[in-house]
Image (cartoon, rainbow, N blue to C red; front, side, top):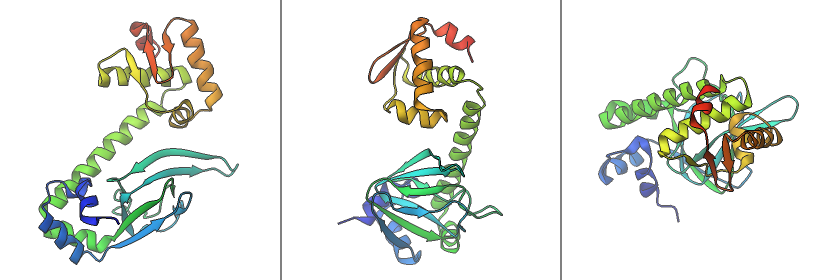
Amino acid sequence: MLDIQKALNSNMLFKNFNSQEISYFLISSQYRISNYKPGQIIAVEGEPLIKIGLVLEGTLEVQKNYPSGKTLVINHLATGDVFGEVIIFSSKRFFPSSIVSATASNIMFVKKDNLLKTCFQNEKFLRNLLQLLSEKILILDHRLHFLSRETIRQKICFYLLENYHKQKSLHIYSGISREKMAEQFGVSRPSLSRELSKMKHEGLIDLSKKYIIIKDLTILEQNL
């Protein structure tokens, strides 16, 4: 059985909350919890957005659907994540992408009015919300820098150099499959694999199942 209070403890919006504060939120916020099966649609691109979603349990996919029928997974959400909080305060309150449950999931929905009431009543909640919004703006800015790279090689170099600074190692652990990496890059898997193979042949990188090893850091930087 899902322990709602424990699930909220892992949510950014409730950082530094004690059990009494969480209990008060649960009593006063008029929330609703919905359960979803794997593959079930939670929200459709273009639908009105009147409430935010808190992922209490499970994994979700944020998808972009194209007229050609192609579906691109642009993000993943997991336990503790929030969706809709950026759009709900804008003048155009519509889901910019579709959200699908990748695994069995439980989502808590909170309407805008109840969200605002909690912000007015609890300064910590307001601070946490503002921090969450600020961090998502920074992530979006980083994503734009990444997507502005014109070629697949430039995207690969950007990705490797960024993770080199994060991991402090030339052995870059990706943690995702080539297919998922291609989705993040916005390219096809064969195109990504071909470019990685070319870079290996040129002596820039080496490849293993879980790692991409940087062999020539200087040339990677020159390829940005």
